[in-house]
Image (cartoon, rainbow, N blue to C red):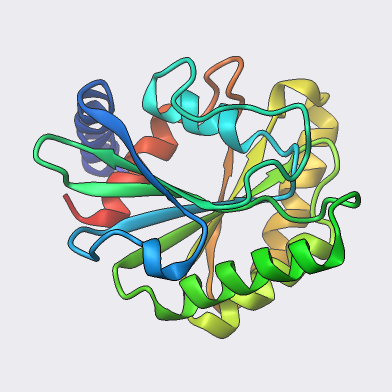
Length: 217
């Protein structure tokens, strides 16, 4: 990275931090597509296995303690949850239902899957998806299924490794390398892997800057 590029990135991070320290509010939960808000601003959606730390990352990203409710029960989020950022609203964050849970009834799983799939394919203002992957486990088959779904929907996505503070440096390096290699096989995957820890704040400023870059504000 050149000095000029580093300076631009630092400026983008400062803008992103300032924006996320301002207005961030829960808008609504949509159990069905007919309840979606009007597509007036860009949207960034969050996807990940249940218990991957999605709520914690949303809280860290927005600098709030509980804007997104963390749950000890995997699969609790059964709707698309929308959060507005900026005053006036510049873009929205969308918390999608977690996947990969074992205890939910088959019909419920199918309902969630159809909701997500239809949202991904039909939402014109959806500019980027963040696919969250637990650093301790790396990519699982359910993550690959999600990535395939995004490839087919032609929705660009960034892979975000969560809970990086829970992994030894050598193991983390291996997971990052393996994830990068896998990402190169997917047409809609962004080549850069984001390594984060909601608890320690690792990678949060960089991810905020990436979100700002994606929504173009």
